[in-house]
Image 1 (spheres, rainbow, N blue to C red):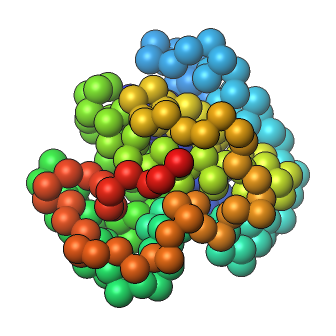
Image 2 (image 1 turned 180 degrees about the vertical axis):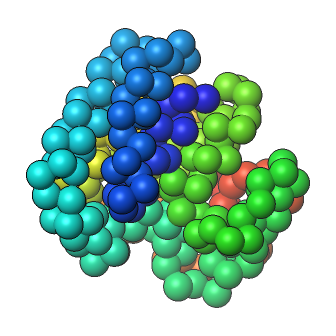
Length: 213
């Protein structure tokens, strides 16, 4: 699905290969039939900004990406980090998530960790619409908090995370009416991280019992 494939590319490191592919991405978004008008506008706005900056300041664009996602833990694109940190269950969770992908035919042997959001979106793009939304619904609260953190930092990447968050909430359990705040950002599920029993992705694509409201 075009939204997920495009969002996956736009949330990845903006190296020379990605920058060269921006015109192709813009054309694909313009022709996409599986996005709403609002989604298309958001994708096009982000791509226009990225293309303009890539033409004038490519190295600064790369540095900004590193500062945003690699230097600030609360902005991490590795989603289990927001739930488990360095908890003992994170390793098994990543292994099980990788096996889950492979059961669908996605080979991640030479790629990022399986909880890296661009890779997760690459996987989601392989699913039908209902499966994709169900998978993303398991991550709805983490996506919400990541979006809030990026918005608080004034990052343009928040707009892309917001699109994925909106898709995830279409089947997600109801969340609090109040908006998340930056003060909550270090612990999206308000849990101490000591998840028991260990994560089992072979049963369902979820980390643990649903987070409490």
